[in-house]
View 1 (cartoon, rainbow, N blue to C red):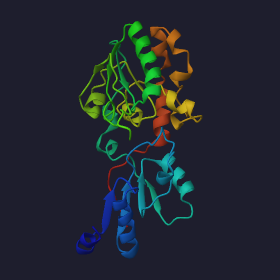
View 2 (tube, rainbow, N blue to C red):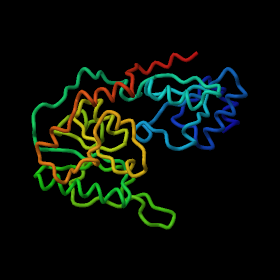
View 3 (cartoon, one colour):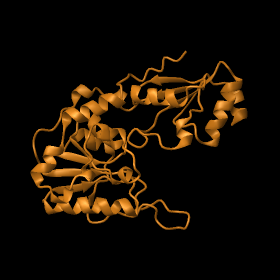
Length: 267
């Protein structure tokens, strides 16, 4: 790869990560070729806005394009002694859309969507309790499953994220699904999919047992009540609709993201 870079002599190397050996090589190469730059585009919201893994906290690139000021400030704080330019760029996918073309749903169809990250056995117990309650209230419940669910294995060969049973699974791609806005509300956890749902102006409910047990709050928790902390098994149908707070979810979105235009404008 180093020889290929020497041959191509790129002005910019664009990636979505700085963690792998190949991307470390990009940083080494641009350090020795001062007219080039290794540019990383943020590719997720981490754990509801919280960067938990040390390799992700400390940038190994020349320019980091974040989704917004929230992430920019966090990475500047973590990398105050490093020579890196950190920019509020916006989410590249969101930047392709005019958000004004979407509207929040005001009618009720009884259909709801569950949109969790990959669930391990412990978190699946809480998820199934929620699923049972929603069925008890006669909601039409659908699941958009994480790609790793039921597939990724532990080192011992067991399934890391067991299959989710007893619910209709939707195979449609996520963004077209969210653009249709067919669901009364979408329940998600610390996944960046919650921000995806808000971007396309879907009503959302935040349900995240995982990080409460680990003893910290996500940035989502600063704006949206965590349904896991409520006695959700005692809620009635009307109560679920009342949890939705469009003003709060818009405040969360505006805190974490800016809407850009995908013009790099790099020096």
